[in-house]
Amino acid sequence: MTLFDKFGRQITDLRISITDRCNFRCVYCRSADPENYREHDEILSWPELDRLAKIFLSLGIRKIRITGGEPLVRAGVEDYIARVHELGVEDLSMTTNGHLLAERCERLVEAGLRRINISLDSLDSHKFERITRTKSFDTVMQGIDAAQKSKLGPAKINAVLVRGLNEDEVEAFAEFARQRGVIMRFIEFMPLDADRTWTRRQVVPAMEVYERIHARWPLVQIQHERSETARKYRFADGAPGEIGLIAPVTQPFCGHCSRIRLTADGKLRTCLFSKDDHDLRGLLREGATDDEIVSYIQSIVNEKEEGHRINAPDFLPPTRTMVFIGG
Image 1: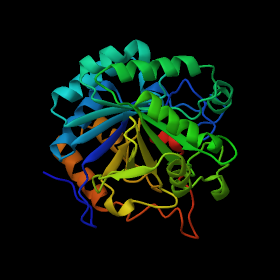
Image 2 (image 1 turned 180 degrees about the horizontal axis):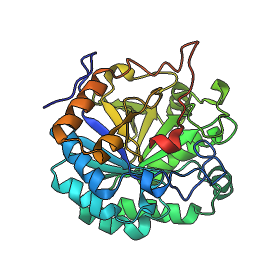
Image 3 (image 1 turned 120 degrees about the vertical axis):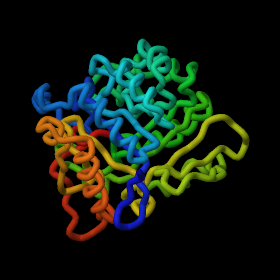
């Protein structure tokens, strides 16, 4: 079986959030108020996550990314990755803030993880502390080093650029890619922050990032799959490293979207900016059969939004913010 929406887009990528908990408090994602977690019994159990992974793979999902919150704060994540890997998924990756990565990297690789995205929003330790509200800069850098030395390399390093916060580091991030041989990805700031402070003037357009890097180190575009979110570039002088630009605000890529999301509390979302959640947890706990769950998923995916409408005059951000949706 395969999943298609009414616009003919095949759905092959699934983001699975395994927890809404995180050991960081990044200003563009989570409020400083820590009292905003779901109760433990509201989060999908490992057997429920196992069952849904098997169902989604039967529907033609080829890529699964494990997200959070911070996925490494939930005990048992390596075992879950191993079970998903054994189901035969083609591409199994994780997004992490890197704080716990150095000590867990080897076990993640052994479990079957093949790619990793690490969030790093500043190369200045003091600014990093202000953005994440932690003192974890050194441990994150150790995590990046560990990933680079493992089968997970080259790691993808994600930086969300916010005007007035870290846009002055574009060239430093590019140099970091050249020095470390990592894939440096710049992501436009989206209206998904918990404190609801997003404004369009805070967005640093991907084209601005490209022009600044290209002026310093000429870039050559790399061919990418239609459904990939990032436009990819290598350095013309042959230096190691790669640049990725993700521009959901200024250059939406909705027309080729192949992604759906499963939140930690068991809600299916067909877009980051969906107005509605679709409850799979309720079906699981009410005794629905696999066939019933499959039919429900197919009906929801068929109605996937044509686009996120960030640039529409009547756009309203979703009621759930990024921390509850999953990265």
